[in-house]
Image (cartoon, rainbow, N blue to C red; front, side):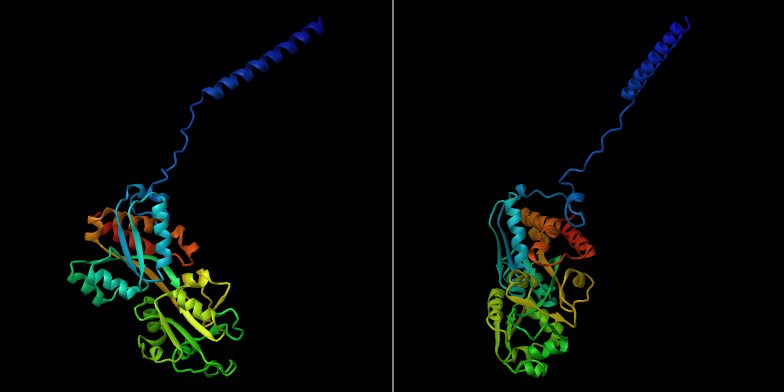
Length: 339
């Protein structure tokens, strides 16, 4: 009898556990579920590169020609952005004429033939006045930062660093390398510099010669060119040659060129961001509110550029503008569009 009672007790216990388990399962399935988190649309401004102040931009809706002219330094970055803009569906002829910052401003402010000017220096007061004379008010868009690269051939075995004072000697009165430093060889210095229409030339003259171009233009063995590729080839041609141009052109030819440190500081993302490299400089685009509002494709391209430039700039060989600078550029776009 006792065994029967024990068996019955065990059976009742098992049944109780099964019912409890079923009750728990039912309770779990009837609990209200929290709604799944929703993701922001891919086209939302917060998903765009940069600081995300601009409205979403769709290249597929952009149609029409865009004419850009100016800095050879800005050209590789603008070329990359044009290619991406076109790849994402923008229609029309989108061209960049690499003629130098000064010539770019002349085409934008005097001839009025371009929609956008590219520049490796800020616009001058005289250029702003020229723009106003034809009914244009330049709007500035900071798009990145360049470290001006001072380079020699990779075959150069005596030079790794120059002070600013030595750099001035190299590009002015020194005839041989030994005139710069007695430890250097007594070989003639071969100099390669951007031309006088170049923003790179303007920047170099300002930083190295306190805005006086006379010492450089009076130097011997000097070749000037608005084409940075000509300068690259010139420096590659001799271990006693030296030149300077935008960092992107050095990076593209790093296997045959050697970049110099200036005042002991090598141009890198860190030294540019910290502003410790002496020859770091801003890169700009300029347009006009009237152009942007009359030509939606120009406004769309500038929006696209400012939204996605930081996804392309490292690959090109330049450095991003600061968050504050990019914010200001995006606010300038909004103001230009009356928003």
